[in-house]
Length: 220
Image (tube, rainbow, N blue to C red; front, side, top):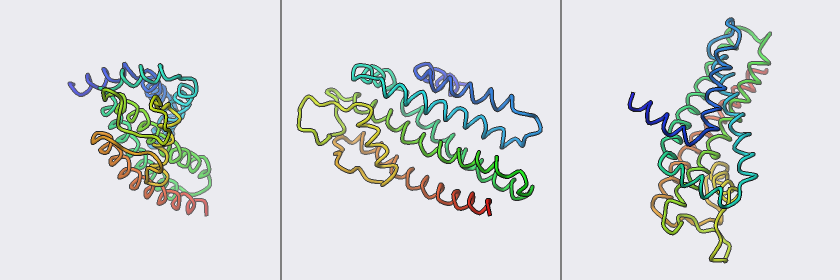
């Protein structure tokens, strides 16, 4: 109960995430009763993930530096908790994909196309979700320092402060290439966060490769 109360408290500062979770739950519960339980769960998960990714992309595209600063400071205490929940849910979705593909093989390929598309959408959404959440965690970690610190970008202007596009660039570079490119990490807290994403990205990319091969095999 204590854990649920903490999670509820953290979600109060993440209305888009809370709304996405409720929307996904509603879709999972309202899907036809004759659907396989894993299919229903993945339908709800995809609804949550793609709604959340769309909402956050819209937010980041419109946010100025002041909004980023307020958003990061408001979520400083909840960033790691929410990140942990998102990572756990993402890993669970990968397991569910494996179960969905197994169900397809057991029940024949006549109606496989919608299930394969659902699995492919889940893989893509889950892959995008992880660096998106790390972007928010990097923002919270960066602005938790007084003065802000943790990442040094190549701009020479001393007044430079990264915006969402800068932090997305950093997070997605790690997700894609497992390296930090031209951005320097300057604090221990940020190094730990980067280490966590690097390890997860390696494991996640390996899992996605295996699932992609499995999906391709299901189409043959």
